[in-house]
Structure formats: C-alpha cells, structure tokens
Length: 521
Image 1 (cartoon, rainbow, N blue to C red):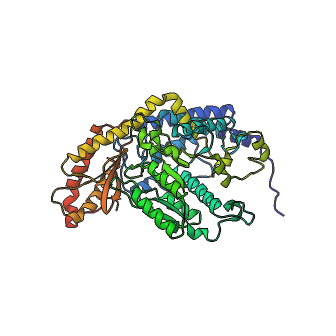
Image 2: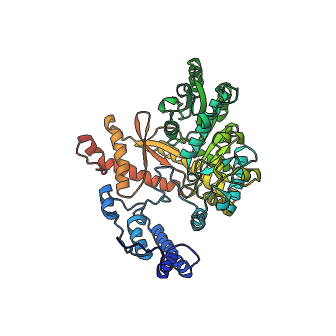
Image 3: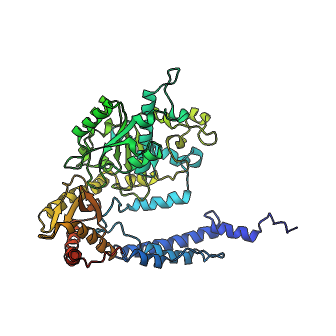
C-alpha cells in the first residue's frame, strides 16, 4: 500500500499562504503597499511616454509576449510585475491619446481608477446583501438617481451590468416574455410563463423584434442565444442621417401584422456605433403603442447626454420607453466594465424572478432585504456602480456635463474642417461624437479608394501613430473617428488628418499598380 497523504498543513506553509493572500497579515499588508506603489509608478511612467502605441505586427507582438509557462516555484510578485510591465503595460494602447479615436473606447476618470482599487480590495459580490451590505444599498440609490435623470421617476427597478450586450439581452428577453404573456394563455386563462413552460410552439415563428439596420449587433446575437434565431429580427432601413426611418418602420410593422406576426419589441438606438445617430424616440413610441410592442432603447453611448447641458434634448422621448441600456465605459469615461439596465415598470421583473433560499429567499424579500440577484442575469457581480458614484460625487454634475459636451462640440468643428479640406470627404452628417469620412484624392481611380482607406488606417496603427476606425457606409469603405475624448482638441485632430493625408499620398501609387504589401500581413 502507498503512503497515506498528510492532511495537515505545517505552520511554515500557513505563513506563506497568509503572505500571499490579501489579508490582515502584517507582511501581506507591507508587500501589498510596496507592490501597489511599484505598479502605480510603472503606470505613471507609461503615461509619460507620449507614443500612442509601440507599434509592430501581430507576429512581432506574439514574439515579445512569448509563451505562458509558469514555474513550480514562482518568481515572486516583484519580478512578475516587472515582466508584465514589459509584455503587457508598455505595449498597451493608450486610450487617452488624442490620436486613439477608432472605437467607443474611452479615456477614464481618475476617480474611476481610484474606485477600482476599493472595488478590488473589498471584493464585494452584488448578488446578495450579506455579500455587499453597503454596496447593495448604494447601487439601489444610484439606480434611483439614473431613473430620475431618464424621466422614469423614483424607484430601484434597474441593475448594473457588464455592458450594452447584457443590458440589451435583458431588455429583449423581458420584452419577449412580456409579449408571450400578453398573447398566450393557459387553459385557466392565466398568462403563459416562458420561465415555467418554455416558449409556445408557434411563438418561435410568430414573434419578431424590429430594429434599424444600424442597430448594435447584439440584437441579433441575443435573439440567437435566446433560441429565436436571426430569423426573428427584422431590420428597418435608415435615413440619410443613419437614423431609423420612421416611415419605413411603420410600413414594416404593418406588413408584419398583415402576415400574422407579433412584434414583441422595437429596439431604438440612441447613438449608433458608427454614426452616433439617435433615433426619433417619440415617433417610435407612438408606433410601438399602435402595435402593442415593447420599446427598448439602446442608449449605451447616447445615454451620456442624460447629463448634458447643451444636448439633452436629443434624448427627448427616452422617458417613454419600457427599458434602457446605458454604458458608463463609453462617454461617461469609466473604466471597463460598467453598464446599467433600467426598467420602467418593476412588475416586469417577474419574467426573470427566481428564488434561491441561499441568496434571495422569500423571507428576505418580505423583510425588504436588497438581494440584487433578483434583478440581474448575473449572480456573482462586481460593485462597478462605485466608479460612477465616486466620479459624480467628486466632479459634480456641471464639470461632468462639460466633459461630455466637449466631444459633441468638437465633432462639429471637425466636420467643418473636413468639408473644407482637399482630399477628404464626409460620408454622413455628424450628430453626436462620431465622424465618418474617407480619403478621396482627386483623380484617383475609384476602384482603389476602399483599399487606400483600409491601409491608411492599418499603416498608422502599425507604426503606433494613430488608431482610426474602419467601417462601411453603404458600399463605401469609411474611416471613423470617435471624438468623445474630453481632452482632444481641433488641433489634435488636424494633426491626425495631416498624417492620414500624408500616408495616403505615400501608398496610393503602390496600391494602384499592385505592388503594395499591407502591414497587417
């Protein structure tokens, strides 16, 4: 027989455990303070380096990082930190850089960074009150404040989420089950519960979700995850401003009704990913009422205008919606991840309600215990609400509004500059904080313009000089600048556009004569 393994752990090992764990052990605290100080210094040095990105190809970066091969003995926190500074921190994209404009990828508030330290240190879990006593109450208060900003009125019907995709999933899921409850009944006349009985057989083909052709891809993705498939999503054409065409929406709704379909939900968008377009929420609400459909608004980006002094009117009608998606890691300048879902009528939470005795028991509910798992698709969840709470309390609404509005105003200046600059062409009028344009050299063959624009962006990123988005506007390859940064100036953008024009001039002939080698290769 083999030796029986020992079940005890010697005190020397326990001492090492305590030192490695974040706890009240004096050596653990001392090591934490030292390592955190070193990490902050490394980040500060990284910030002082003015280059947006170190550059290089994917192949080169793979070589720099190497393989992951931890040893049995470990190298210690300090040596590992130095290694991570080399392979992760230094080659990371500086999202605060004025030439980093490709995506809805924001620079972050100092308050948000500090809040992350408190969130990580306390490691609260937002599913039950006894795992986050203060955080649960604070999140409910912040949800109440956001509801009032949106025009929903006082209440705690809402929850913080990982971001727009999850918030959109909640809106669409509740809308679908709400529609089923309205249109299908049990034999005793009570409403059909998808949660208990699954989908009625005919609902799979009958239920539809309607959104614009520019809506976020998570609408289709979420409907697929819900078992409804892409076939359940009907897209509506957009107008010249990239907004949902309300006349076309009305035609679509009428056609679906004539075909015997049921529109469970209309998804409006307040800030499309590319153009920043904001749909006409009031007009869409009227059509939603006429066809007895739930109205969800994806305001992941445009929701920042809830705090705006100059552009709040662009969200008129948001108070009429049934649910709202908000992302604070976009134009609210919070570190990833930080989003929220707001629900106008708390009774509709019944469609995802589930009681677990160890988390959110009936007893707790009767005594008003705020177990937030009842409002969330997640169980274990970070206290990300602290970041927004801290920022609002520290900055105040006026400074926050100024930072949000800056990007919208800058966008108008950039549009005017592009329209008067030879070799550049605007593709969609600006509305929020996005600029869709392209390089179009005079006399250059039309068949090569798409490739020229794609590779101008790729070349500038490969050298670490700029991060410009690439997308499509109709059938045209477009460059995109998401001008939400509260510290970017018109001079910064002019300098970036000068790089764009210079790069186009450098590579255009090689593209046209077939000798060009893309940097992405």
